Image (cartoon, rainbow, N blue to C red; front, side, top):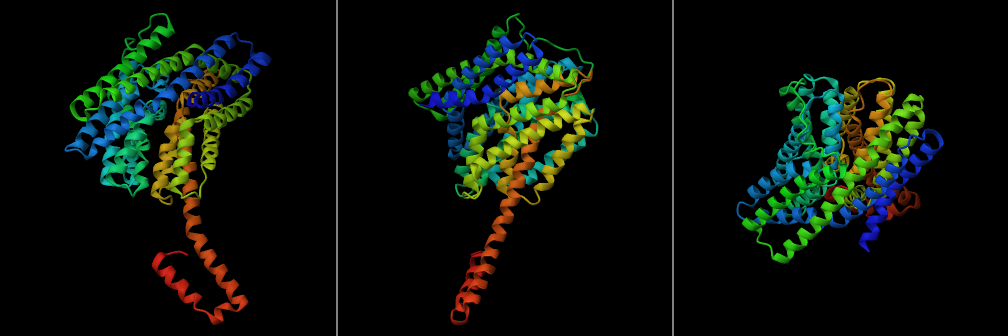
Length: 507
């Protein structure tokens, strides 16, 4: 049954963290946060199960249906309009961006939470439109990436380092469990409608969309004074975190449903049975999302900060790196979106690169990203400079990697981060940083999103070299073998091979 499969995935995503944290707390810490953490873990498992069970029949189905209207008259214009609006709304519903928005005010960045979330959403919506345009016009993804990140580098020259880190964190947090499935479905649908023979068109929308929040937040920081008064009217503080979570989820989900049903009434004209099925699954997804947000707020975030702070005070940074490496690797294996990406890479490489290799690569990427984040805090490195170096490396690799792998690699940063990693690994580093009395830790999510871009492109480069070298090696080896046996003296094999090489480029 599907529900059992999703439950198993959710357990495997949360259980390693719960077990390790429980052992560390009982043996070393005994801080009193263990019970809320375990309760929050249980709530999170149930929430993720309900969410995964219903997301394909709600958000993903919406993306498929909207993409199917591209063949209608003015269909592309309608899709672009819907993508813009839905990109904003889906970002507001992201648990990851809510966690990040709650954290920035604690470190002297006086931007109202509502302003921050809306700016990130606008960035997602605008670049979602640009990504669909790229798919329809078949523009190579490297052009969009180079131009966009060129603007990022220019803006970075005028901002403090911690603002740059926050902007990149917003990028990694914006395309999570709500937005990513819709974007994948929308891009795949539009790509198949416009060019069914090009699989590379099915990738890249998440990667392009994630650039939007970086530029949007940077522009916001340039336009808004850091001394602006903080506003609390987005937090809806009622004194009860479950009530707050319910209000936030409702305000995010209801507009999404409203926009889709308006779009359906005006253009799609679906049957009432289809709409009823979408509505029911959307309600189940909303319950799951509410439980995810509640579980994270109730136990995960507080425990992560206390654990990071404790290990920092005891000068146990090495132990923290080991724990984070284990956490990151386990999360990658348990994240369903990572396995979906692995299957896509296996298909794109005609089976030459197995999906398990991709999953392992993403797991290693999260390990490397967490180690870099902790080392940068421990040694008081500037996280912004580290981000620029990793980003520069990923841009350099675009020269050598195949186009399809460029798109896949930038998508990987979005699918690698789920609510578990964003709401535990990030606060863990923030807590570790606070033990040193410094307001660093931002940039962690960005590193976790950028390192997979580098690793997946390296795999693409290796795949490209393998494809070019194997036919030549096979040709030389087979010719030497025939020459040794004397066959070439009495046959036309060499002429036949030359004909095949000239016509097809490989044996």
